[in-house]
Image 1 (cartoon, rainbow, N blue to C red):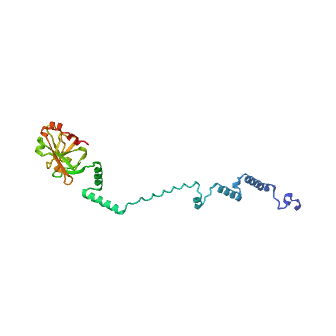
Image 2 (image 1 turned 90 degrees about the vertical axis):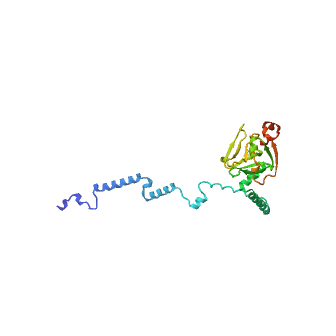
Image 3 (image 1 turned 180 degrees about the vertical axis):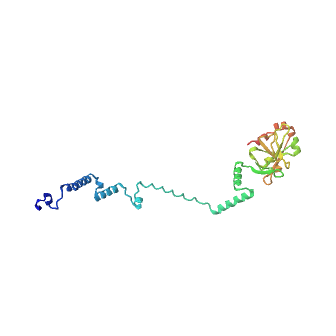
Length: 262
């Protein structure tokens, strides 16, 4: 009965059955095919190193700050040109002369009782009104104050018309451009009569007429010399004017109308 074993049982144990060896072979073949289909960047450690190299190529290389300063991406801006050298100093006037001029200027300001701007204006006016001086004056109470540019030698008219006789209206005539009311416009009232061309202005408070607009010279002012401040009048010449016969006196007088013109 031992000799009657089947041939299958008599085969050595180390041999595999045909069905058992077919499965591993198929698996190995599939793995090889899958490996062949992978992209080069996904295959193994070497492929990963190649991927890192390509990534490094794509990233821009960053230079150090020192290299960036030395060779930036754009050309350096042009340097601003140096300013021109200062001009050589002018030859200064001697300190003694400057001190003398400064002292004269300060003395002039104190004497005239003016600010720096006021003193400068006075000098300009003096240049403009050559041969004239600046007179100042006003009413008795001080509410009305004025200044006027006229000669230091005054030509005074003594009129004998009805109103001038009563108020002793002696006056000299100047163009309106040379007269300036400094203060008191609200303190002035005006009286007129007859033709109403003459504007007899006087202070509301003290009643003094320090200036007015004469009929003979509507474009100027008649200034009362006795209302001027002291120190600017050098001489006075008085001319009698027959204002009681005003029309005839105006025809005979040759210069009175021109006294209010520039």
